[in-house]
Length: 79
Image 1: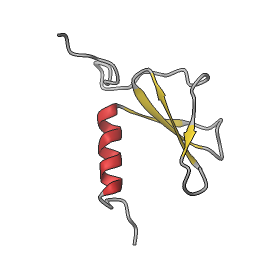
Image 2: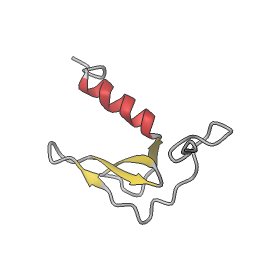
Image 3: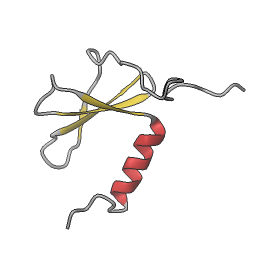
Image 4: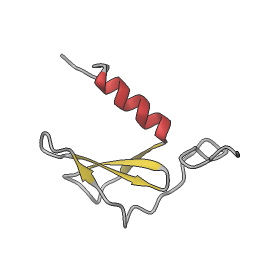
């Protein structure tokens, strides 16, 4: 079975420009829903729900997993 390249950075280390116009954005049921995510072409896009026309951060699945696990472990707690 061949290795999948979906969600992997391109050969130059950059991520592709994704067309987010048709993305289905999801908000958390907790809090204010300011952060939204969408799954697009094997990547995870994240944006500020208060500024939906602003830029989105793009994560590979591995990057997203590391972020979520870090958040669960309290890595980003400021208190």
